[in-house]
Length: 156
Image (cartoon, rainbow, N blue to C red; front, side):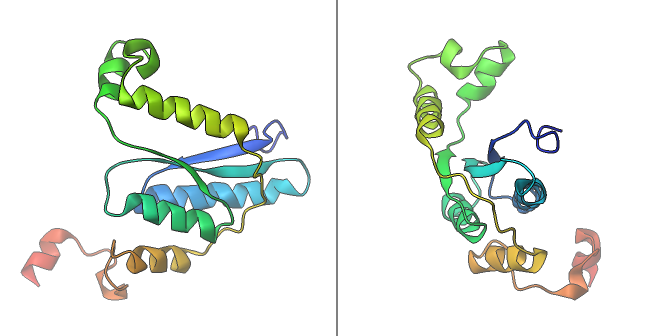
């Protein structure tokens, strides 16, 4: 693993506004903390690869702030990505004038110019759930629903 082997210096975490993607991003931040003091690894920011969830850009910006970094770019969802992938090409190769190609160019410039490398401050699962509630993504936590299927809810 590049972090453990001290091969990574700046890490960008790609995530979306989905709960598990944010959970994974926070776990990667925990891994960075673990190796930051023994090496030069730092978190350089979050990149939101949009899944078109509610208030996604605001949510990822808020998560970034909570862990001590920024969302350096919001990559909107665009079907040109799938059209390029089916041809085994990048968007820039497939359709260089596409709006999505410009998004990737902007992202590349932001990465090139970024100097904000930090040791993150990961949050707890409770804090992550509170953030999701704050943005109206999930309802107030109700321990009684954990493990209950949709079918069981419908008959209750």
